[in-house]
Length: 187
Image 1 (cartoon, rainbow, N blue to C red):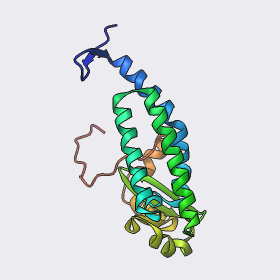
Image 2: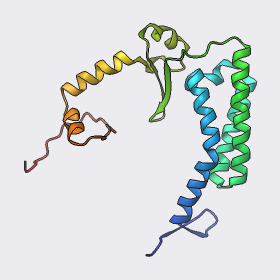
Image 3: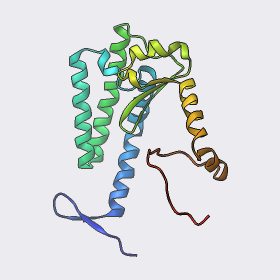
Image 4: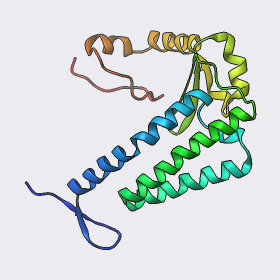
């Protein structure tokens, strides 16, 4: 089997296998940071915590994130691990500062997540919708579970998704487009 190679920035060649191994090692190194970040975003909402602290602390946190991005780009696992540790401490500092300032965390029945580069918040209890919208960095992307289910029911009524899910158990909806399908299918 022939393994293709690509030139790196310094002109040397690296195999695709080596690049995949690097990506796996980097992802493994970042797992503890990802866990802390996920917990903080679940508690405070995606993108919200840096807005609740002093500008100085928010700037330090942003700088630490930028330095981690540079380390990841450089593929230096030791530097990545050190920068990840700094960011873990940064998340904890943001959390403490927000709590000390008396800011409320998101209700427990709230999910915050990033999808296609945008922050979304799903509120399980409709009664929390207004409060969470006022707390959110992106109030236009705060929805309650009932709204999602209503939209899903309307979409399902006009689509083939339910039939596809019956035919292919475990399949998941990955993308929705507005284009109309006019394929000449033999069946």
